[in-house]
Image (cartoon, rainbow, N blue to C red; front, side, top):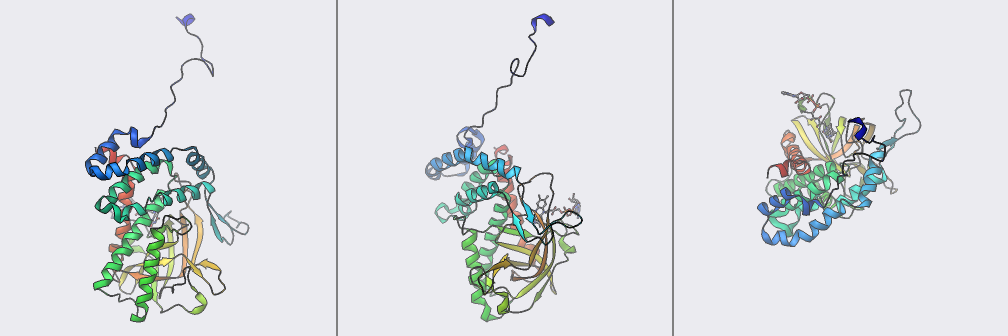
Length: 353
Ligand SMILES: Cc1cc2nc3c(=O)[nH]c(=O)nc-3n(C[C@H](O)[C@H](O)[C@H](O)COP(=O)(O)OP(=O)(O)OC[C@H]3O[C@@H](n4cnc5c(N)ncnc54)[C@H](O)[C@@H]3O)c2cc1C
């Protein structure tokens, strides 16, 4: 028996055929079935070419090269030397890989977030968005995680602007109402922008050392201190900074490279939700962090390319969103929107078919 077997070598003997990933929009019958079930014939016909091209692009050499770069070069915090424990000293900036930035820009240009609010798609916008999220996620090195929070922030700000039409804000004096509205409209324009040089992702800062599931243990405090003094500057667009000053420590914050954040903090009336830009512009034109310092990045088992940080917040200026003391209800919109993105990213959506 043994005489009939030719011993295997590194190049001879049995080899399993290499799997080839084909265009998932054309190839994956489950996605096709779902799209046919949930989209009108006219939308499907109008979007077919775009989705075919997109499904090719996420498998392109350029995208794969950048996935490899993002995974090989995890983000780090630049510092001036190291402390005795090996942490960066006087950490002053987050450094992400070229691959991460490429993939984030790719997702922004492709409208991974903007598609969900595309007026031209009407009620079908979320379905087309979910298809794009599903096709992109495996090629994204998890830039789709910040996208989910960015999309959630869009929802929160849209809801707040709509609410203020009948319920004017009570968190600041009437002379700040117009500025407050402009801050939110400007932020929405960033969050929905497909031009990466103008677009913002958003952080969602809930989790603290006491735990993430139960935010009653929040140790971040927000105080109403009134309009920001001139020396604090403005937001990067020249709008005034919010009249609330937020101080605390956030223990697990992804999208550390975001342009804005929604965070939870205690006021005298309970846990409330605040919107803040992450950067301020000073009178001399320089851009500084809005009272935010990256303590360190998390060393995670997975999602290595995604910058997730511990953040020290000291006097971050912000605007109250929703009613004071009802912040969990407000930020739950971001959680629920992230759930929508997560199910689009996973196989769940196709398994349902
Ligand atoms: C990769 C990554 C990225 C993250 N990014 C962010 C981010 O951007 N922003 C942010 O705010 N957070 C972020 N988090 C934190 C995440 O949201 C929290 O881990 C999550 O909310 C759970 O909180 P915890 O880890 O403190 O666990 P805990 O809340 O301490 O829970 C531990 C265990 O106890 C269980 N448990 C808790 N409470 C109860 C209860 N009342 N009854 C029964 N069981 C309970 C939980 O199910 C869990 O099994 C991130 C986490 C990871 C891993």
